[in-house]
Length: 210
Image 1 (spheres, rainbow, N blue to C red):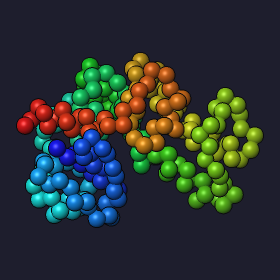
Image 2 (tube, one colour):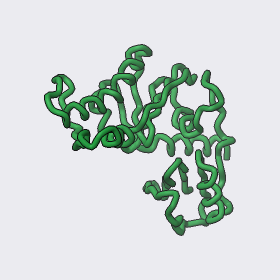
Image 3 (cartoon, rainbow, N blue to C red):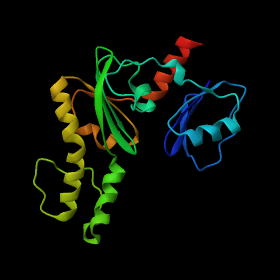
């Protein structure tokens, strides 16, 4: 079984329990097509490209029946991340940072922030004097005394403070996923990192529906 999570800018594959990513602009690899390929997608054009290469790939969106109070604009990648979670705040640190609250297996809502890279790129667009070196080791207990520290301090706090606020409000643990979680998770207690959260959810849905 081969899994593929198609995002806005990447294909994320899991083959033989090894994951790898490709840009949606890249040529798709020659996979072991005798195996079933299951995918989810938030990118219609990238889905079409996948199906040209692997015409028998199966879109498993119909496998997910998700309870939420959110509108029908909830991204399908967020649905998959949350689908098999009972009680947790799901934080996906990708190109955007999505935060979703799951209580008693019901999705109560959530919010979206710019991702770490987007925030890092913002300052140079404001002024060339605001170019800086990103440092994840910034001490958040001290007020910055130079521009480089001031920007790093602000970026990290812009991300972690809204998440801490929602964690305190709902008194839930946090499940982090996404490649930039490593820069954020150390600022939290009662939290875990699950690199394969979406793939685990896809496996559960496939097992239940095939």
